[in-house]
Image (cartoon, rainbow, N blue to C red; front, side, top):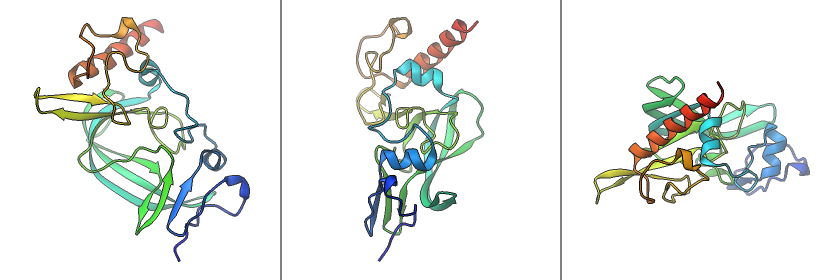
Length: 211
């Protein structure tokens, strides 16, 4: 029988154990990692401007590998997924040609540790990622999953479109974007070029406001 030796038997951790599948709940993550970034249900909804201005670093990249591995901490043994991205374009901060990000949870030999709402990546995925400066977060993204914007090819219009973390089309009406930050384009699925311009515009406005 496979088990997941993640935590001790303290009932306050609220971990649901299953021989093949361990699901981590919000309260468990808060206790184990001392962070408010716990699960999709527990994270406050952020506006687009909050995501952009809160991010420590921002890049456009493509997933080249996903490697689940065991990790040991003072809280016990757990699975993390190490996701390697090729950095295609830097929008904020400094990056090398590749970056590895760790997300709590994963699948090793059929033993699954699942964190509710954690972003899932596959080789070939293209994303704009807004990275948090919060240390030891179970997700390195701003707003747990909200700092992921997916890039999808629009073959009909021969361009690329931007989707939110859950696959919805990102538009100029999405995410509480203020009027001063909206580009002069018609509402609709936003092309990547417009999205990048909006990110840079929002960053510039935030920097100007701090002067």
